Image (cartoon, rainbow, N blue to C red):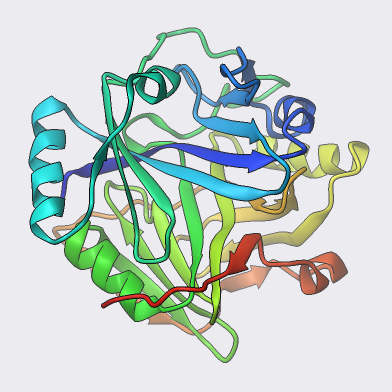
Length: 308
């Protein structure tokens, strides 16, 4: 069953949550939204109330990944589907539903302990998005394609595929397999991928969030702004083999990365054929020294046993 229609929102926890205000507006071009009840920094990238939340906490960790479903009926049917496959699904409390600015929210943990939320009816305020800095294209590619994509780190890629594809209903777009990479990319709408999983034995977490701008010059401006704001570019300008995204990867105030890109591929399920690539990029994406030495995102050791 396929009910998930978009990556709707992302929540992380970080002691550097306040630094995300200036970083999000001055570098990314997001708009600062009113803080959450716990003081969380919230960022808008379109007319939704917010898409990114960074909650205060003593250490960096992935809080939750929020997936959007079309309506109340789809959510109820999908919850029933998950429970029929042995997934323990919880109805969020009223405070959480209000925080997510949604009509309703359910949540569950994947085989690696990552919290995923299902939401419908999130608040939108048409015509109100104001970029935090000049954006030639006036914003980001969102709408029916959702926030962007996330790349999660998993200790068992076959267990991940069994859960995300067979249970959650994500469709495989393609794979990248080489001597150092083993990733699978999944779509739930026309965006080439809203979810990817990267295999790192014994580790679980998030590698990056991708944001796609509407104008190539906005990507160029971001490169300049990284230098002006002392933000490390971890992977230089390059173009991917699979989704044809031209992008950079930049550090954030927390452990995860942001891929800032332009020109991502769209897929059509009627004609799309999944392929295997053996290199992640056609050109560029050269690794910095910090990329080579820093952790691959917000990660922690996986202590459990994933089931397939």
